[in-house]
Image (tube, rainbow, N blue to C red; front, side, top):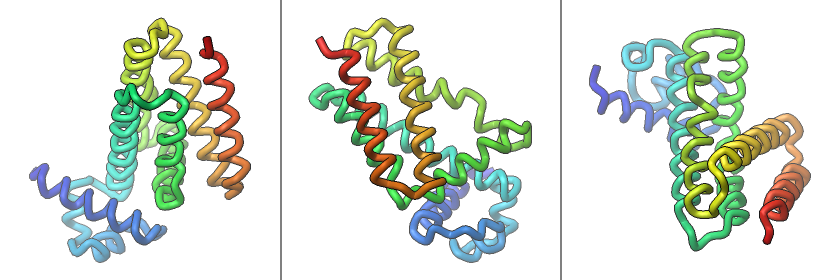
Length: 189
């Protein structure tokens, strides 16, 4: 399998979904939109679910890279890092990707493949890098940093689900800001 062609197709699919907010995720419709055949998508991703899983993993990977870059910016306060990440992950252009994430996550929890692969190490991929950074840059004990980051992941995911379910942007943003304030006050000297 040609990894470069797979990556090119995945990039085209991501661009298409982000630009159009497409809800028809049949292989034929997606293939037509990105200028390839459904057979080519099947070859590289196995199935529609395999393609959706790859999309969600790519979006998550990009968000994790952003979180790592923000965490490494020691000139930015931790609350400002949290706000910058929230702004990125909650932007309206990513709503379809967030909806796909929750849909796949639920299917993975039910044991369906390939969605179950999304669960493998999912929390650790968020917790470990951020906890190490919090430990190194802010002096938090590593176990406490892991707990705090896990809480942050849970809050962000819960608020993203709230935003999708209610569409109440101002209320959800206010709840996130309250979490940041509580978190920051917990570590204030």
